[in-house]
Image 1: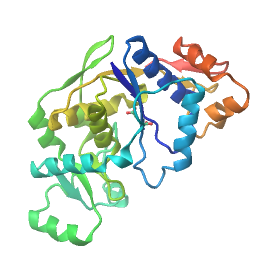
Image 2: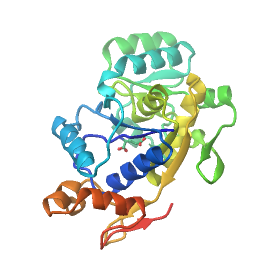
Image 3: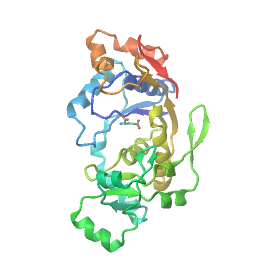
Length: 283
Ligand code: GLU
C-alpha cells in the first residue's frame, strides 16, 4: 500500500488537512506500506514557498513520518507536457481562447461539478483558425469530453469498503487541462502524479469525490494504473460548515502555538475523535 497527502501551499493547514493526512498515514502504516508527501505548487499566482515549509513543519508536529522525498509538482512539468502532447496528437484536446467574461456572458452555460460547463465556443474552430489565433492569443487547452467519453466507454472506480462507483465525467463538460498561466490543471497533474508515485490508495476528502469522475477518465485515456479511492468525512467547525483555509482558529499553527500536543491530536484524529467544537460531516 502506498498513500499520499498532497497539500497546496496556498495557506496554513487546518484540522481538516490534519485529519486527511492522519488517515492516509495510518492506512499506510497499518499495512506496512509507504506514506508520501506531494506539494501541489503549480498554481503560480497562489502558491507561496513559506507555506511549503509551514506544511512540512505541521506534519512533523503531528508525528507523521514520511517515506521518500517530497514530490513537488513544479518539478514534474515535463510529464504534464508529454501527456498533453499525447492528447493533442489524438485530437482529444483543443485550444480555447475564451475569457471568463466570454463564458459568463454565454447565458446558456449550466453548472456542473467543476463549475460552469463550457459552452463549446472554440471546439469547432478550423485547424487554420486555431493556428492563426494560437500565434498571438493567450489560450488554455480543453478536453473534448464527448470524444474522450466515446473513446473510453463507461468507467468505474473502487471506493474502499463500498464497492464500485460509476464515473460521470461527461457531467463536467469540456474541462481545462492546461491553463494560460499554469502548465497543468489540478486534474491532469494529480492524476499523473498519483500514477507516477505508485499511489495504490487515494485517501482524500469527500469534497473531491466529483473530481474522481475526471481522474478516472484521464487514467483510461492515458493508460494509467487505477488506485482505490477513499473519500472521507470532512471536518466542520462549530457553525457546522466545513473548514476553510481562512478559519485561522482551526489552523495547525494556532493549535501548536496554543500548546496542543501534535502527536496526541493525531492519535485522536485517527480514532475519529475531534477537539471540542469540531465534528465530522459524513459524506
Ligand atoms: N492539493 C489538492 C488539495 O489540497 C490535493 C487534492 C487531492 O488529494 O487529490 O485539494
